Image 1 (tube, rainbow, N blue to C red):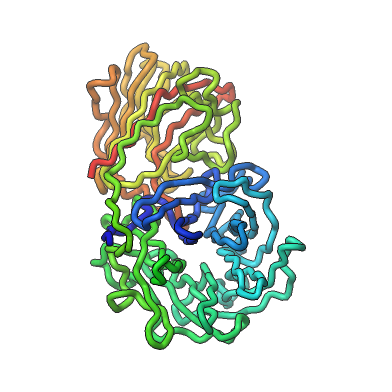
Image 2: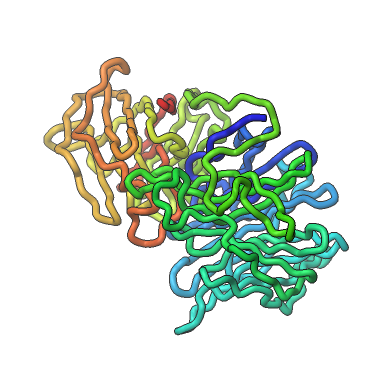
Length: 521
């Protein structure tokens, strides 16, 4: 037996869906506007997880051009039946009043693909889940939205039969559950265990009032009775818990017959979760009345999980990413769409990642930007850049990035009076500001840049020789790079991003030799 500290998927990995196929465990999580879509991690011990694949890897499956921040891919559900893997997901185009949300299904013979072209399901709401019943029938369960005045905007859970032969839902969706008094009912998962159909739903919104509730019925269409003592898990009104925002959960049975529950969570620093919404795991069991309970009693998320496997947790990461192609390292993603050779190339200068300058960091269409998640509060990220800007519209560097309206960008650019300069662009809830005066660096051709985070603090430095680093400006506020700071329902997390812009439209290139990501705790 091994005790593992939650969360098991650190950094931006929300809305977990867990699947066991024989001795292999998989967790799928949301990726929002980051491409490729859906992260799938793999483990055989529930302790150490490895990023395995992202199945939505082409525009025909996922085109997010123009999608606002924190839209895109929401709440995937991963399942398996008779040798086929199934993945359902929502593509969100708008998340405000009406919520334009479109649900799809892809399939694959192997977890690593190839994954099929998408089958359209419906646009009732978001967070779809595919349920394979014991009798061979299949159903889509999803929450539904209601935009009308004085109505419940989270209007309940719909059940609709799905035909694999016809590749479509069969119509006549039935409202099977309207939620508990907590409200904000979403994220449904359905299970048939012994004589009951169990329905798990996320409630309370995805922030500090988040929760997971349980209902059950002897028939799939209900009525569903609510579990006494709901919710199953929540961190609400317990600010001293290490694991906050607990909710949006999924259930899996282990090889020994015991049960585990994965769920969304956050780890706040001064009430800000810079690492985004993460994934934790709980030991759970069915009590004598057949209701699901957290092991140890109560409904607070436990900070430690007991795995039946005898393994050692992996040490903190220290990864040197070298860009020798032909593809980006798996840890990296782009924004909204894949980047073609006109934007990202390993061929034009072998051994380097070449980014051809595109639109600004405000763009919802085509940015020359690649990033990887921050997964530790105390870390150091370094890159070497070769770039030759000749005016201020040309810039390249490294960003501490949340979204188009929230980032710090340490960049090399050009000033008419100073020549080549190091400078920082800060964007805070859409307000742009140059935090510190630009620093002239002479007629250089290469520069090393570094970002260091220490919980609520982030600092930026540069070097002209790769040995001695000079801090640029003062320490800055890392709390800004979080869901909790954004003023318009944000759901992602902090990234370290390499970027290049040419606002003249002539695609000035920048070459990055490496990125080193080092966790220091």
